[in-house]
Structures are given as C-alpha cells and as structure tokens.
Length: 438
Ligand SMILES: [Ca+2]
Image (tube, rainbow, N blue to C red; front, side, top):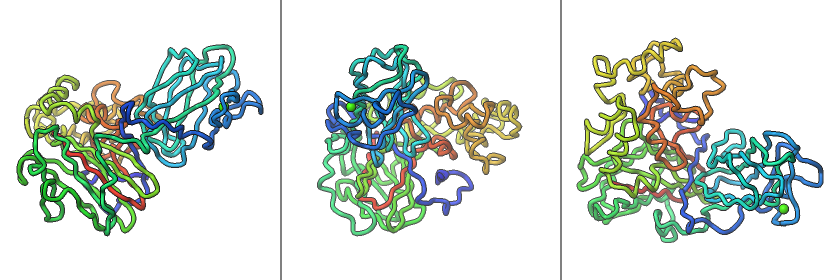
C-alpha cells in the first residue's frame, strides 16, 4: 500500500504509514560500481528448467561449469533475490550457447511488480555486461525471444551494486554523526559552485541555518513535516522542499514535483540494516545548469506545456494545475476534458492534473488519465511501459520521471499508483542525505 503525496489536495496526512517501500537507485558511474557479485549464492528461481541438472541456482553458484537452462520456449525468466533492496549498477550475463536475443533486465522490490532497466532485441550471447541504473531486492532476466532453437541458458548471472563503493555525489558518509533522535539528516550543497555553503539554507520547524553553519539536523519524531531549502538568502524565491513523516523507528518521505519544480533535489536514505536507496533528480539534471534544465523542459514537452517553464522563470516550473492556461477560461482549459469524458469522468483539466474534484478519491483513474492509459483495460494501468505514449497526457509529470533516479517521481498527487512515486520508507533509519542543486 502506498500513500498519497502530502501536497495532494484533501490528503489525509494520517495515511502515512510505514507500509510502503519504494526505492530508487543511485545512478552509478562505472567507477562507483562494486566488484562483488551480489547475486552469488542468493536464492534464485526460474520460469522453467530444461532438467534437474540445470537448476536456477546453478546460475548464481559462482561455478562457471554449471548452468541454468530453461525449457525451449518463450518467454522464460530467471530471478535472484538479493535479500534487501540494493542499488544495482551492472548485470553480467554469461550465456551458454543457448542465449537470449530479446530480453529485459528488470528489478523489483516485491518480486511481482517489475521495472525494466535494460531492454535489447539484439543480444548476441557470450558474456554480456550491461550497465544499469536501478534499485530492487529482486533482479530478473526476462527473455522474450531466444537466439537458438534451444532454451535460455546462463552459466552465471552476476549482479553488481554500489554498496561499499564511493560516490562523489553523496560525499563521505563515514563522518556522519550518529543520531540521538530518529535519524541524522545531512544537507549537501550540489549547486556546482553557484552558491557557497553559507548561501544554502535549510529550515525546519522554525529553525533556519545555512549549511556552513550547520549541515546536520538530528531529526526527531514528527508528523507531516517539511524541510525547506533556499538558495542565496533564507527567504529567497529559489526554494524547494522535501516532505516526510518520522516515527520512533521509521522514516517515510519523498521529494515532490506535485506543486512545481523549484530546485533540483535528491535524497538518499540509509538504514542500519543496509537499506540504501535514493530518489529525486538524476545526476545529469544536477550537473547541467538551471537555464539548461528550463530549456530542456521546453524542448521535451509538447507545445501546450512549454509555458510552464516560462511563466515563473527563473524561479519555478509550476505544475499544470497552477497555470491559468490549464484552468477554465485558459488557452488549454480543455486539454484533458474530452479524454476524461471519454471514460466517463466529468473533470476539468486542472482536476485531472491535480487529482481533485471527481478524481479526489479515484487514484487509479486519476493516474491513468495523467499517464494516458485510461482507455486501456484497468489491468494495464500499472504497466509503466504503456505510460505517456500519446497525448493528452501530463507531460509535466513525464518530464520529471524521465529525469529522475530510477524514473520515480511525484509528478501529480496520485503518482504513487503503480509504485511510480519518489516515496521511500524504511525502519531503523540511520541517515538521510539531501542534495540541493541549482
Ligand atoms: Ca554456474
């Protein structure tokens, strides 16, 4: 079960519970990818086996002389359980002669909902090293077209993670002091030198500090909290926030684009059990200039959405519902209305993008409208590969997904439907890193 974004209209803040686990990867550079095989001797299962001599476990036993082999049909899969959510940066497939020509590498937190992190239809067999960015407890090779008349057969299926590797983006985590409250929050200046540390401000519950004064905050239990960030001055219009609920032994929270984009934000949650995931804008967005990101938005969204990067520039890119052009009387007031009506929903465009009015209590339908899958059978509303394929769709939300770590973002209030949001939650938290960019 998932929560609605805290900024959603009519949100019941009490719905926040430690029941959801979303995760996103640290997009790892090759240098930051660990060398250990995280799949080694982990539990593996497969869609089928050719015979008892070729079990799934033979692909993760570290022995190059043993292999898994499937039945001679499509599709077939093999998956491995890493034991806990990990940031996955590389998968190595050591194919036997029976290789997969078309297959995906997929990740999952629950073993049932899968996210593709690599897709190919031109596999050539041999030893294939695939650089990926994803997070999950489970990693799966999902084959849809075999390269031969035989099945799929892997001598070894190796998975590499960022665990234990260094990552310049998040800096040195060994010096983070232990929390006396629930978890230690550290705010990082990732403005690429645009602002010095004494001009990067955070505020929470009446406290205001620059990073230069105080980069750490020992987070206590709270309900529906927000931490705000300002660049330049404590009241600058260059501002954004994260939102969270912190229990005695749990952190629940997310980055959000539900209201708008103000600053590039990413956060990484580390727990004492090794859980270590991140969400928010990806490294590429952090690295490029603010001007480039605004221009990227204009370049990538359809014309109806261009103005969002202009009407509050250079401070914000507001969500569609905050633009008069998408409201009654505006140039694009009818952008979603016909599409919504085609599936029996009488809602304004702003009600669609804001999951308000008749959609306030309909998470699935609101998400389906925003993602343009509403006319498909409801059974397909949770398939991310079908999302945003045609207009009308919430291309504002799509943009933030396209440029988010693991493509997870809160682009509209019910964007947690089908596990697409940037919500993360874990018990026994150790620290939360928050990167603030320009
Ligand atoms: Ca083997």
